[in-house]
Length: 265
Ligand code: ARG
Image (cartoon, rainbow, N blue to C red; front, side):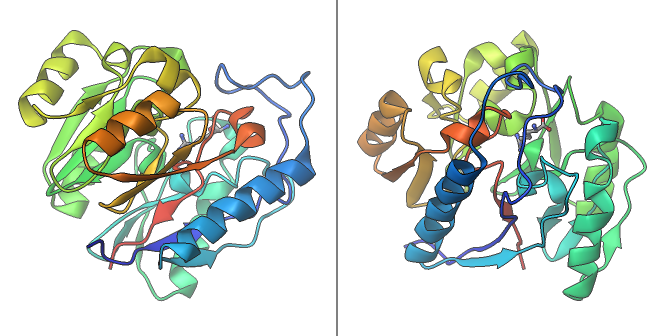
């Protein structure tokens, strides 16, 4: 049985692709804001249907990527580590998310180093898996371990298409993950194999539809509907799966997990 989760999401009211900070983004390509909103609503309703709580943060104009709430903080044991974005285009999201947590009564630790929240820092059991290479700085990993008091495992990302850890790796439950081996350096891959010998190995086809950008409550994995192969592997391993279509947000390089920040009490 899964424990009900508390998620923070941000409606893509102001979603757009107006700049390019990852290879998925093409500011000259068309996108449909109304469709982005309705697809996002379906994701939110899916979480509610699973019995989870969804809190909402007010979307701010001029911040088209604010829908990607995973990048707003890292919350473990009620401790909130704030974020610092690599790119100026997203910088103003950091105080917005920190402000939301303060309003809810949390203290927020302001980071000294670049870290993009749960985009790159994922809790797996007692461990924090931390990506670096594109966005979150290696220096921030030490800061994260010091503040959140969980062992941090540094994972080196090597493929620019998988610029955040949550595009290449999904935590399924306290003891297992799914990941794309090609997204990691040889040493990091060896560490993943040692820590998670029974991991589900995703294919390049699964990853190319952001299939690994999935949200698991331990029982049910909510993932992009296009990732049919990964969904089948997950079901064979005993998980339930729900496919959602976030085709519009994928044009910014985001999927279900990017839209979802877990607030862990
Ligand atoms: N366009 C956004 C960026 O490049 C997408 C962020 C996706 N978020 C995530 N958790 N992977 O920053």
